[in-house]
Image 1: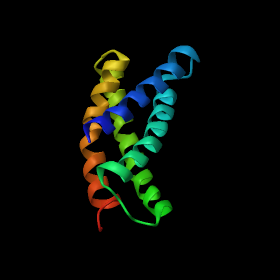
Image 2: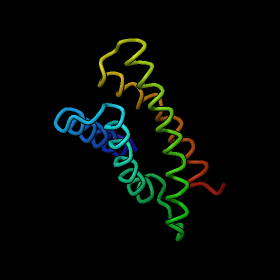
Image 3: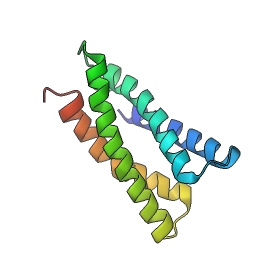
Length: 118
């Protein structure tokens, strides 16, 4: 699980950095795009390796995963905003901490809702 989560975090950071620093997209928009791309990658990795899902209804399962991820994105964005804008932390330090703070929600919700029998 660690390497798959790390892969998602690396993808998220690279896409966010590229969009923010090289293409000059607004930082919270870049963060959202990086997060969405990482979510798609994470769904595939979680389905295959973390939860070893055999559920034939991939579309419904991805919908559940996306729902969990959207809530995770909202949490992530709130944490990022508070850390960066209110506590004046550097953007990427804030982003790293926001990812860590959101991880528990994402994992438990996917365990119980997306890939569980709920």
